[in-house]
Amino acid sequence: MSVPSTIQKQATDLRQQLDKHSYNYYVLDAPTIPDSEYDRLMRELEGLETQYPELITPDSPTQRVGGQALSEFAEFIHRQPMLSLNNAFSEEELNDFDRRIREKLNLNEIEYTAEPKIDGLAISLHYEKGSLVAAATRGDGTQGEDVTHNIRTIKIIPLRLQGNDYPDYLEVRGEVYMPLAQFHAYNQQQQQKGERVFANPRNAAAGSLRQLDPRITASRPLSMTCYGTGIVEGGELPDNYSDIVDCLKRWGLPTSAYFQVVQTAKGCWNYYENLHKQRAKMPFDIDGVVYKVNSTKLREIMGFVSRAPRWALAHKMPAQEVMTEVLAIDVQV
Ligand code: NAD
Image (cartoon, rainbow, N blue to C red; front, side):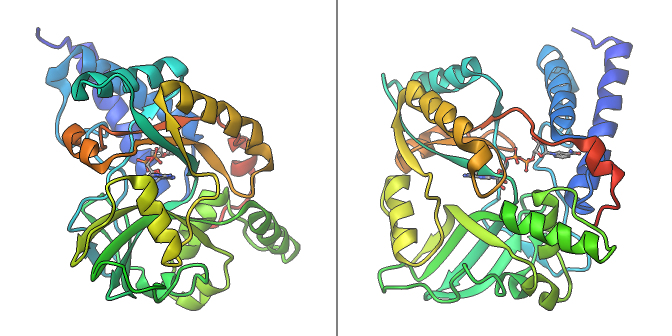
């Protein structure tokens, strides 16, 4: 089926818009539209590409991990790509995700893990013989920024792992964020001084971490929650992700207090509803829940699509942000 020229033009327009907003969001840490609007544009493009697969190109925003490294930082090549996550916006889409996994694995029931999707930025930590030797941002998934000096200033991140049963080389991944109380206090202080404030906690975390002077990062109240591993050499991790999280905790790494093992799509949905009720009282900003197949062996069978694993899903919650307010203030980049 040939693609009508009006559709081709629509897809080109959407790509240009998405690329521009990605640049503002990932590179400048200064979004100009709400995330929900970005998600809507992305879905529109995905819809066109599903209807006309000929439209799909490797550089389409639907195929790529958003983000780009700032040239001011030394580049860091991820030996194991840091991917994004597929999204769901309803219980029906969660059920579709579960059905695809059950069909592919030929299993009746799947054990998942569920945890909050913290709105910060993805960071990879590298430990060699238990010492933190490098840390990097996700960037475009393959090439990130070397932010080792800045990461070393975040007190919750251990410079040395505890115990002695960790692998010789261990890459740990997680989200760096600014807790809400600290975010509001920081912005209030800035306002009192007549200085620029951050648009939202994500922007605050990314802007604080991507500083050339680590003393500035050190003065910002950043935290981290670990949610996975990358390269593992000279040692083995348990098969289940929930057991890996226990190891990370034992080695002194910060993990989520909200982390849970759940059974089937129903268990995922119950977790989502429960967390949604708690959202307003949580100490950090979340934009959803992440479900992951617990068994890493099953994950390997599921594999990846171009920009995201097939064994994980980000179930988004409705947006809480009010962009008009954000745009009305002088935002810090
Ligand atoms: P994503 O944020 O939807 O999901 C992937 C990221 O989730 C990971 O990289 C990781 O950083 C994070 N994450 C948080 N908790 C996690 C956990 N427990 N386990 C695993 N990962 C976890 O994907 P993305 O590609 O980084 O960003 C896309 C989103 O960014 C869009 O959905 C949109 O909302 C927003 N965005 C907004 C604009 C804008 O202009 N407003 C522009 C670009 C992107």
